[in-house]
Length: 282
Image 1: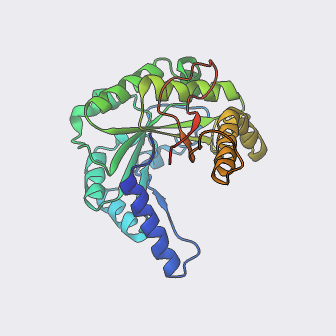
Image 2: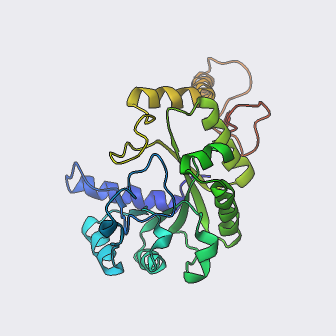
Image 3: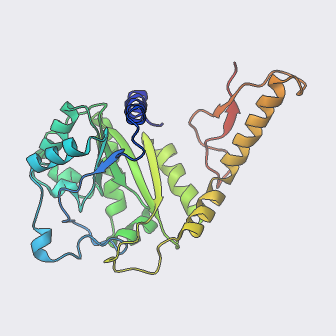
């Protein structure tokens, strides 16, 4: 699980090029929003609150391509609204892939199976579906204000993986979340669903969102994630210390390698994230 090596190399080369040109600020990811329409009415989102004439608007493929070229970033994230409601979103993705942009199509996946035949998506190392999963079934369905969406999203992820697509997830968290709810959903996505990558963030405080009471502030965000990942951080620090001591000869016993992450698999301890730091042998 993680970012493909080819993508890391492309991004690293791009950053190096910007620095060689003396640019201190430059775009890394283009957030390309072809429309604001959505099939859901999430309490923490402010997109569908726009006037009807705005919601009816959408970018043409040509407008999207011009924006991508003007920006120049190596990665393009296509959120919405719900991008799968755009009738030409597959045309947009296909052209960006041809231009060797790393594309993340962000979707709640609820309409994916019923609209699939309308599109002609093709698996590519440059293309990933990023499915919105805010928690386990009860938590996620409450977040999107509609029962059954969690099951449809998980079914869509499994379907996409069977078709050969790279699938990532995007999880946003609110003040109603706890370190344990963070741990539970990430372990489920990694162990049970086996997604290719997971992205997490505090929910963005949309000005027009119906629910303005549960957005995380900076201090709350740091505290939530610090506690959720505390075991992994401590293991990484201990592993690095043991490696240093072993390398300098101050640690008795068998030589310890540089710390890495354990092979994917379920942590036998309930309530813990399963990626455990362990030494690579060198």
